[in-house]
Amino acid sequence: MSKIKIRSNDQVMVITGEEKGKIGTVKKIIGKKKIIVSGIKIVKKHKKANNSINYSGGILKEESPIDISNVTIFDRKSKKLNYLKYQDKKEKK
Image (cartoon, rainbow, N blue to C red; front, side, top):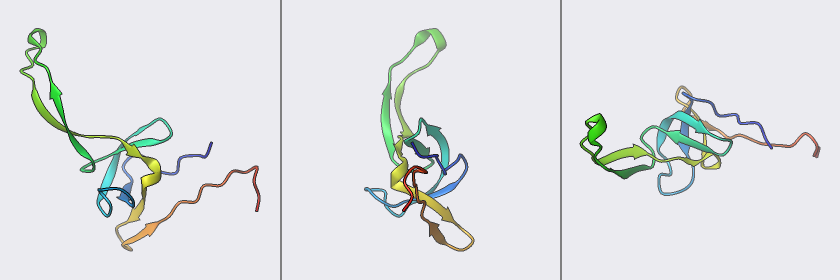
């Protein structure tokens, strides 16, 4: 498996999907294939009330994970995308 080149707090731009062209900051990396980006792919979650911890419940908005292959690193200074290339060390072309 390839090494992940995107880290937390990196600026990334979505390059595919319905959120294409949006820029955000990586909040969390989930496993080797998913990341959570601030302000990207916001979904509504219905939370049930819980009286034991005094939580009233309701509808919350939060970010949903997206695939790491759908984003690339974005450099704000040069305003350019830095495309990442993954190559196995076993295969040399």
